[in-house]
Length: 487
Image (tube, rainbow, N blue to C red):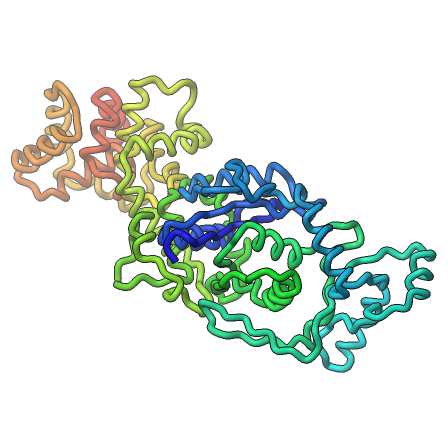
């Protein structure tokens, strides 16, 4: 299989790239990389009303942001183009005419009302709704009559009777469908636009696709596609249908379970490597217990035989845990760059960010980096650095400053701060150790009053970050307000 694998990701540009689509793209990408094959990205834009170039650009940019570059297709070119379905209409028209001429397809003149009546009749008999072949064997006279009436016509594929169609699925094994339960299906709509099942077969066949890895919801389309492959004398690819993604309540993933688009997660400060790591675990299991992987490690480990049949559950806590891991592993510069837009939005940062301001913001970010599940959360943690009006968060904080040892602690702390030529996290740590030794008090008796006096809170970033970030002048302002104000 090495080198010969050709896979594709073919989104419809009717909105942003969603979680399910991103996972399909990732699985295809991993399969191609695993075997030294090629990944093709093409656009299925035959939904003329809903498709837009804006959505197309969003999807392509999201793929690149995730690190899923492709080898051939839209933006790249290649020998199998065009890679946008609306630019391939002549290919579909020619193939439809071939099927018509061979009697494997026919014109259907049924109206929407007639089709709905037929559907209701099937339901009334307890049968699966399907087209029962009203126009299958029309006489020439009937055709002329319908044409004269100005009826719109579609092209339907003539489904063989009494056949079992076997989908040999690499994830699910053999899945059997009865042709009699399918009914003749439309391959070209009345406006001349091909349906999904028809266009996708021609695109996959003519682009030499060897493996189709896609969501389980497409499994029911596969028998129709296999019949079209045979009718058009094409060799079908290998199919692998990946499980659905469900919310925690085991219903299909939707907006009520949280954000569903890659763009939304990017906009909240999730990192691409965390999303890739999370997506791959939705329906694929690694060999061992490890759950954190680089793209290179995933390429090495990935295989379709470890893709699960059972639905995957989207667990936002798991994503947050993974993203927090990658945030902690990232450089402070990277997280600072991501954080600045959120700090601006919250009003914490205004105007140009000078080199001095950037260095200060790096200290701010470093102080809370370990607490973040996603970068947008930073505004919940850093308010203490931007407003020198200290408000006690609760009675517990107020009580800390009433301890009998507090005046001595504050006097010694103020003295130490005045003596420090430079205040850095490193020498602040040393100063605090020396302070506890000097006062002969436990760490909590020293650190907690200082924390409360400077922030009004009993929990938060380490003091060896808070003190250098505030600096000598602002520390003295806060002490005057909280300690002297309590005296």
